[in-house]
Length: 136
Image (cartoon, rainbow, N blue to C red; front, side, top):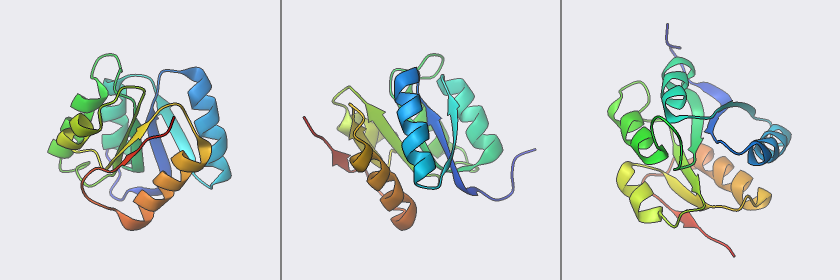
């Protein structure tokens, strides 16, 4: 049975790279978040519907359902449409992420200060539209 209220401290992250997952786990844990990981888009969609996390981070290149299709499906579902989504990718795809309904686009590689700050700001402000943070 789906949760009736979103978990205000749990983040759902769809990421295949174990090294990136470990960095995300450490730094987001230090920031006070519980983190759940999945490694494919279908699992992300199912977990999002079940736990209704505070925020979802997805890479684009996921098996089963890619990250952009995942974002569109999350937006189409009344249970998940208001959950902020961050697309975190090595691909230069900020425009495509915005069109898919992402709230933000962050470009890999993982930079702790940018990543954690962006997530905290999204949760605090619940902005609309996509913003892009890029670095070398």
